Length: 213
Image 1: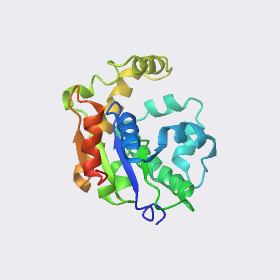
Image 2 (image 1 turned 45 degrees about the horizontal axis):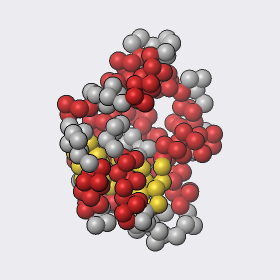
Image 3 (image 1 turned 90 degrees about the horizontal axis):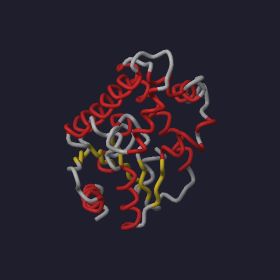
Protein backbone atom coordinates (compact mmCIF):
# COMPACT_ATOMS: atom_id res chain seq x y z
CA UNK A 1 0.00 0.00 0.00
CA UNK A 2 2.85 2.39 0.78
CA UNK A 3 4.58 1.79 -2.55
CA UNK A 4 1.32 1.98 -4.50
CA UNK A 5 0.63 5.31 -2.85
CA UNK A 6 3.71 6.80 -4.49
CA UNK A 7 2.29 7.30 -7.96
CA UNK A 8 5.52 8.77 -9.34
CA UNK A 9 7.74 5.89 -8.22
CA UNK A 10 9.52 4.08 -11.08
CA UNK A 11 11.77 1.01 -11.13
CA UNK A 12 14.67 0.29 -13.51
CA UNK A 13 15.63 -3.35 -13.06
CA UNK A 14 17.86 -5.78 -14.92
CA UNK A 15 20.88 -8.02 -14.66
CA UNK A 16 24.51 -7.02 -14.24
CA UNK A 17 25.97 -4.77 -16.91
CA UNK A 18 22.67 -3.71 -18.45
CA UNK A 19 23.28 -0.03 -17.70
CA UNK A 20 20.76 0.54 -14.90
CA UNK A 21 22.77 3.18 -13.04
CA UNK A 22 23.72 5.09 -16.20
CA UNK A 23 20.13 5.10 -17.42
CA UNK A 24 18.84 6.22 -14.02
CA UNK A 25 21.35 9.07 -13.96
CA UNK A 26 20.20 10.19 -17.41
CA UNK A 27 16.54 9.97 -16.37
CA UNK A 28 17.25 11.98 -13.23
CA UNK A 29 19.02 14.70 -15.21
CA UNK A 30 16.33 14.97 -17.88
CA UNK A 31 13.17 14.51 -15.86
CA UNK A 32 14.03 15.75 -12.37
CA UNK A 33 13.81 12.39 -10.62
CA UNK A 34 15.53 11.52 -7.37
CA UNK A 35 17.51 8.26 -7.61
CA UNK A 36 17.03 5.59 -4.96
CA UNK A 37 20.17 3.46 -5.26
CA UNK A 38 19.28 0.04 -3.88
CA UNK A 39 22.82 -1.34 -3.95
CA UNK A 40 23.99 1.57 -1.79
CA UNK A 41 21.29 0.65 0.69
CA UNK A 42 21.59 -3.16 0.62
CA UNK A 43 25.38 -3.10 0.88
CA UNK A 44 25.54 0.12 2.92
CA UNK A 45 22.94 1.91 5.00
CA UNK A 46 20.61 -1.10 5.42
CA UNK A 47 23.29 -3.76 5.70
CA UNK A 48 23.61 -3.85 9.48
CA UNK A 49 19.91 -3.46 10.15
CA UNK A 50 18.24 -6.53 8.68
CA UNK A 51 15.83 -7.91 11.24
CA UNK A 52 16.29 -11.69 11.70
CA UNK A 53 12.51 -12.20 11.90
CA UNK A 54 11.23 -9.70 9.34
CA UNK A 55 14.19 -9.96 6.94
CA UNK A 56 15.57 -13.49 7.47
CA UNK A 57 17.05 -13.98 3.99
CA UNK A 58 19.04 -10.73 4.02
CA UNK A 59 19.96 -11.25 7.66
CA UNK A 60 21.38 -14.71 6.92
CA UNK A 61 23.36 -13.36 3.98
CA UNK A 62 24.67 -10.24 5.72
CA UNK A 63 25.76 -12.08 8.86
CA UNK A 64 27.48 -14.98 7.10
CA UNK A 65 31.20 -15.32 7.79
CA UNK A 66 31.79 -14.66 4.08
CA UNK A 67 28.60 -13.28 2.48
CA UNK A 68 29.94 -13.65 -1.06
CA UNK A 69 31.01 -17.26 -0.56
CA UNK A 70 27.65 -17.95 1.12
CA UNK A 71 25.84 -17.07 -2.12
CA UNK A 72 28.30 -18.60 -4.57
CA UNK A 73 28.06 -21.95 -2.77
CA UNK A 74 24.31 -22.12 -3.47
CA UNK A 75 22.68 -24.34 -6.06
CA UNK A 76 20.86 -22.36 -8.81
CA UNK A 77 17.38 -23.08 -7.45
CA UNK A 78 18.31 -21.96 -3.95
CA UNK A 79 20.10 -18.90 -5.34
CA UNK A 80 17.02 -17.75 -7.25
CA UNK A 81 14.77 -18.48 -4.26
CA UNK A 82 17.07 -16.43 -2.04
CA UNK A 83 16.78 -13.45 -4.38
CA UNK A 84 12.99 -13.74 -4.45
CA UNK A 85 12.90 -13.61 -0.64
CA UNK A 86 15.53 -10.87 -0.49
CA UNK A 87 13.55 -8.77 -2.98
CA UNK A 88 10.40 -8.96 -0.85
CA UNK A 89 12.42 -7.92 2.20
CA UNK A 90 14.07 -5.04 0.35
CA UNK A 91 10.67 -3.80 -0.80
CA UNK A 92 9.60 -3.84 2.85
CA UNK A 93 12.59 -1.69 3.79
CA UNK A 94 11.95 0.65 0.87
CA UNK A 95 8.35 1.06 2.01
CA UNK A 96 9.61 1.91 5.50
CA UNK A 97 11.86 4.56 4.00
CA UNK A 98 9.09 6.07 1.88
CA UNK A 99 6.41 6.00 4.56
CA UNK A 100 5.61 9.61 5.30
CA UNK A 101 7.51 10.93 2.28
CA UNK A 102 5.89 13.19 -0.30
CA UNK A 103 3.93 10.80 -2.58
CA UNK A 104 4.08 13.31 -5.43
CA UNK A 105 7.87 13.38 -5.54
CA UNK A 106 9.24 11.73 -8.71
CA UNK A 107 11.54 8.84 -7.77
CA UNK A 108 13.43 6.21 -9.75
CA UNK A 109 14.74 3.03 -8.15
CA UNK A 110 18.11 1.93 -9.48
CA UNK A 111 18.23 -1.90 -9.51
CA UNK A 112 18.99 -3.82 -6.35
CA UNK A 113 16.20 -6.35 -6.78
CA UNK A 114 16.95 -9.83 -8.09
CA UNK A 115 13.33 -10.78 -8.77
CA UNK A 116 11.24 -8.86 -11.28
CA UNK A 117 8.28 -11.11 -10.45
CA UNK A 118 8.22 -10.04 -6.80
CA UNK A 119 8.45 -6.33 -7.67
CA UNK A 120 5.67 -6.77 -10.26
CA UNK A 121 3.52 -8.29 -7.53
CA UNK A 122 3.90 -5.18 -5.39
CA UNK A 123 3.59 -2.26 -7.82
CA UNK A 124 2.01 -1.56 -11.20
CA UNK A 125 3.88 -3.20 -14.07
CA UNK A 126 3.62 0.11 -15.94
CA UNK A 127 6.06 1.59 -13.42
CA UNK A 128 8.77 -1.03 -14.12
CA UNK A 129 11.28 -1.47 -16.92
CA UNK A 130 13.63 -4.43 -17.17
CA UNK A 131 16.85 -3.76 -19.08
CA UNK A 132 18.51 -6.65 -20.89
CA UNK A 133 21.58 -7.39 -22.96
CA UNK A 134 21.56 -9.31 -26.23
CA UNK A 135 22.09 -13.01 -25.38
CA UNK A 136 25.52 -13.12 -27.02
CA UNK A 137 26.79 -10.31 -24.76
CA UNK A 138 25.65 -11.70 -21.41
CA UNK A 139 28.76 -13.89 -21.08
CA UNK A 140 31.08 -10.87 -21.60
CA UNK A 141 29.60 -8.69 -18.82
CA UNK A 142 32.16 -9.76 -16.22
CA UNK A 143 35.18 -9.87 -18.53
CA UNK A 144 34.71 -6.73 -20.61
CA UNK A 145 34.96 -4.21 -17.77
CA UNK A 146 38.00 -3.62 -15.55
CA UNK A 147 36.00 -3.12 -12.34
CA UNK A 148 34.01 -6.29 -12.91
CA UNK A 149 37.14 -8.28 -13.73
CA UNK A 150 38.49 -7.13 -10.39
CA UNK A 151 35.37 -8.49 -8.70
CA UNK A 152 35.95 -11.84 -10.41
CA UNK A 153 39.39 -11.87 -8.78
CA UNK A 154 37.65 -11.67 -5.40
CA UNK A 155 35.36 -14.52 -6.39
CA UNK A 156 38.36 -16.58 -7.50
CA UNK A 157 39.77 -16.30 -3.97
CA UNK A 158 36.75 -17.97 -2.34
CA UNK A 159 37.85 -21.06 -0.45
CA UNK A 160 35.92 -24.28 -0.06
CA UNK A 161 33.94 -23.89 -3.30
CA UNK A 162 34.96 -25.77 -6.42
CA UNK A 163 35.44 -23.46 -9.43
CA UNK A 164 33.97 -20.40 -7.70
CA UNK A 165 34.24 -18.17 -10.79
CA UNK A 166 32.43 -20.69 -12.96
CA UNK A 167 29.71 -21.10 -10.34
CA UNK A 168 29.31 -17.35 -9.92
CA UNK A 169 29.01 -16.74 -13.67
CA UNK A 170 26.43 -19.52 -13.99
CA UNK A 171 24.39 -18.14 -11.09
CA UNK A 172 24.54 -14.60 -12.46
CA UNK A 173 23.45 -15.77 -15.92
CA UNK A 174 20.59 -17.76 -14.39
CA UNK A 175 19.35 -14.72 -12.49
CA UNK A 176 19.55 -12.46 -15.54
CA UNK A 177 17.62 -14.98 -17.62
CA UNK A 178 15.00 -15.41 -14.90
CA UNK A 179 14.51 -11.64 -14.63
CA UNK A 180 13.81 -11.32 -18.35
CA UNK A 181 11.53 -14.38 -18.39
CA UNK A 182 9.59 -13.14 -15.35
CA UNK A 183 9.28 -9.68 -16.89
CA UNK A 184 7.73 -11.11 -20.04
CA UNK A 185 5.40 -13.30 -17.98
CA UNK A 186 4.24 -10.39 -15.81
CA UNK A 187 3.79 -7.92 -18.65
CA UNK A 188 6.77 -5.78 -17.65
CA UNK A 189 8.44 -3.99 -20.57
CA UNK A 190 11.84 -5.42 -21.47
CA UNK A 191 14.25 -3.07 -23.22
CA UNK A 192 17.24 -4.72 -24.83
CA UNK A 193 20.24 -2.46 -25.18
CA UNK A 194 22.15 -3.15 -28.41
CA UNK A 195 25.96 -2.97 -28.38
CA UNK A 196 27.19 0.61 -28.52
CA UNK A 197 23.79 2.24 -28.01
CA UNK A 198 24.33 5.62 -26.29
CA UNK A 199 22.99 5.85 -22.75
CA UNK A 200 20.89 8.84 -23.74
CA UNK A 201 19.05 6.84 -26.38
CA UNK A 202 18.40 3.96 -24.00
CA UNK A 203 17.19 6.42 -21.36
CA UNK A 204 14.82 8.01 -23.89
CA UNK A 205 13.33 4.58 -24.67
CA UNK A 206 12.94 3.87 -20.95
CA UNK A 207 11.34 7.28 -20.35
CA UNK A 208 8.81 6.59 -23.08
CA UNK A 209 7.79 3.27 -21.54
CA UNK A 210 7.58 4.72 -18.02
CA UNK A 211 5.45 7.65 -19.13
CA UNK A 212 8.12 10.23 -18.36
CA UNK A 213 8.62 11.54 -21.89
